Amino acid sequence: MPRLVPNGPNRYLLPREGKMKTEALLFLNSRLRSTVTDDAPELQQLCDAATLPGVYGPVIGLPDIHAGFGLPIGGVLACLADGEGVVSAGAVGMDINCGVRLLSTCLPAESFEKPVLRRLLEELETRIPSGIGRKSRHRRLCREALPQILRGGAGELVDLGYGRREDLDCIEENGCLPGARSDAVSKKALSRTEQLSTLGGGNHFLELGVVKQVFDSETAQAFGLEPGMLTVLIHTGSRGFGHQICTDYTEIMAAAAPRYGIRLPAKGLACAPISSQEGQDYLAAMACAVNFAFANRQLITHDVRDAFRAVFNRDDRELGLSVVYDVAHNIAKFEEHFGSSLLIHRKGATRALPPGHKQNPARYRMTGHPAIVPGSMNSASYVLAGTAAVSETFCSVNHGAGRQLSRSAARKAISQEQFLSSVGTVMLNTRDYKQLLDEAPGAYKDIDDVVETLAEIKLTRKIARLQPLAVVKGEGDE
Image (cartoon, rainbow, N blue to C red; front, side):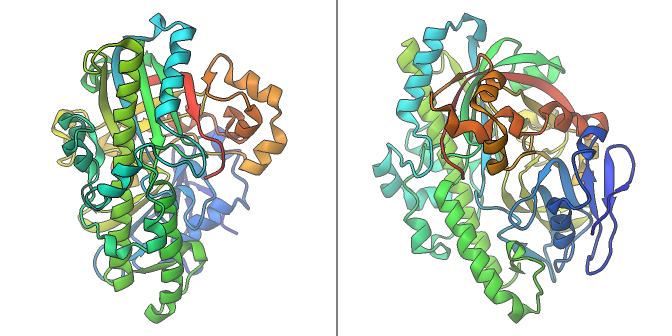
């Protein structure tokens, strides 16, 4: 069994052994370390990933790590872009470009009385379907603009009038990952594209919150965040479309692996050489799902602005509703690290480029772009920035709190009374609380511990802490 060896402050090493081609490096503080047992499946998954061809440097486990399909959620896998490096659909994840977008406003949260907050929640629910299998109110747009959206992402929607031109300056990759080819996508996946401006289920949500605490006032100001400001968080991804692409290519890669002499440690790590037809086709299909997800969050932003206009009878620009940033969680991208060209798989991980990095948007060149780490219902969310030291993790930080109870375990362990107590005064969009027990704050790790793990060793800087006021949450497990 893998064994964790202390390797400096908040760092633990899984030494190279057996078929591993490199070690794995896990970031935990002492409290989080006490929750990881020696037989934890996520440790074995890190070691399995370290056996893949062309793996580069340590496989990274972030503080929100928990077992997933193939690579653990909260995992980062780097592979050589040239030579024997591989791409793995499972190391990106089922919900391709699951991500989070933060909007700022000009509204003081303290001015929101409950009836106004409830009406706003209802207007948002009317426009943005949530839950498993829910389809878009914009079905005609989904059909007619789909080819352009898969190729061009959020920018295509802005061109059609669904957003502001400046929105694109505050989205990772400007809202479009190049290289998308719809001919690499199965008909079954394409049949699952009528879900733009939908949230889905699982841990996806739309949250109205408040900037409760500012740690770095100068950077917060650069991000457009002020104490007491009402904020909007949008957490969703590529929905059934991305899920189907991952499912399809896991099967394709598993079947192709023997032809390339690849022995898979687990089906969830099915992979193919980057240069192979299977590898190139997956990257093209993945880019379609990435662009679909950026477009999903863009259209939700449009609908959020429309809901605010309806409630306040004012132009949405007067209300602010500006995009602070939009980050991807599940994605594979070619990047330069340590003088090498690498394909970085981030699964449940957020890119956090440090100040001065050339790929930062011009607005955030001197600060590093915002890294948004959402909590769950009554737990806080954080806005962070990477430091120069974040290169140790291939410029990656945690994407959330991370589960400490599986969904089934949470449903058994958490009563409806405990759930209601844990969410406190946060307004929810449902009264059938039994459907949300697996998303209770108690099902997740302590967000403060998770964030402090990297902040204490100065890989990140805390910029602001957000507290939820009202949450739209979809039912069902994605």
